[in-house]
Every structure is written in C-alpha cells, then in structure tokens.
Length: 248
Image 1 (cartoon, one colour):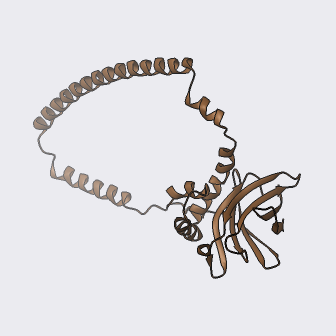
Image 2: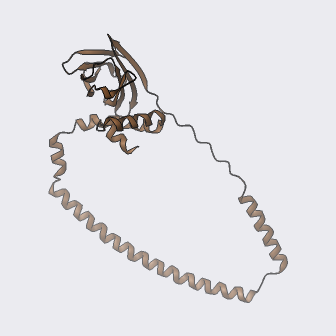
Image 3: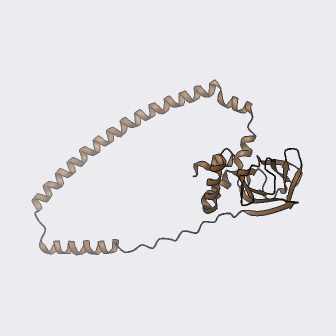
C-alpha cells in the first residue's frame, strides 16, 4: 500500500484505487504520517521547468570525465584491497593450523582431568548457564505520536465543503469531501495565504460515481502553505464562480 502513496499524493490514481488508499489511511496512522511527509512533493515538482529537465539529462562533459576517472580509481583500489585481504587470510589460516596442532599435542600428553576437576567444571558451567538465562528487562518503547488532521467545514446554499488538514514538512495535505455540487460540475480548490498569494490544491469533475451517501470523496491535494500561513480556502467552478469559502 505504501507504494501507492506517491502516486496517490500526485492525484494519478483512478477512483477505485483512491478509495482503497483512503480506507487504508483511515486505519493506519503510519501511512497517514508518511502521506503528510509527501505532501510537499507536488509543489516542488511544479517548480521544475522543462529547461531544468533538459539540462539535467545532458550533464557537462567535464562531469562525465570526472565520473569515469573516479570509477577507474575505485576499481584499482578494490583490486588492491582484494589482493591484500587474500594474503591476510592465507597467513591467518597457516597460524591457526599451527596453533591447533600444538594444542592437540598438549591435550594428548596431559590426559583426562581428575573427577574432582570435572565436577567443579560442571558446577561452574551450570552457574554460568543459570546467570545467562535470567530474564532481561527491556526498555518499553515510547508510544508513537501521529498528527491528527484539523477538520474544517464550510457551507453556502446547498453546497457543503469539508476539509481535513494535515501539516507536513513541505506544506499541508488537504483531504476533500463535498456535497450538494451538481453532477457534471468541474471544480477546483485553492488556498489563499495572508498576503493574498494563491496556491492551487486540486481540481476535478463531479460524477455520480463520486457520491456515496450524499457525499463525494476526492483524492487529497496539497499546498506549499503551512496552516499558519493559510487565511482561507475557496471552492470554485471552472467558470470562476465561488461555491464555498472556509476561513481559518
């Protein structure tokens, strides 16, 4: 399900997949928190121009030469380290074989230990085993804290707009639910900050499939504005008509 969060926050999933993701987010605080962290991705991608993409796809020749030289140096260094490691292993094995041979001779000449020594050894081993099997008290992990969304509601005439606002590292994730909007209406949701700057959040066309129990649910959008910066939200038609305004 986490693989779908990135596509979901970009609004590139179909209605059926979006419904499954939303149902999972309602009962999974970890995924909801991760979605909040991804909230700043759409605004950042919106700032990348076609010229930036073209420049990134054609790195300068100096950069390529530097990368090739660095790769060749790393390969030579890897071969040297591999040879040195093989030499160390060979020397270690030779020393180990000599030590095992010497210890074996000492054990044969010494013979078996007396019964009293064997008894003490058994008692010492039992005491050590008893100490090792004592239960260890592990620290209790602190409970995780998930940011709960701020739910706001606005109404104008027969149109109702309900939003769930979740702060994120790159702005605010906005869950969207409407009712009373006629089927076939193209809508958009925008955020306006305290100096009048506008941030588009999401746009969609209301269909009969979107409505469940009188309410239409849509994939969440996002804005680069933080909750402290937002003055109001506006639900608009494609013709610019303001349907609902929610002031914070």
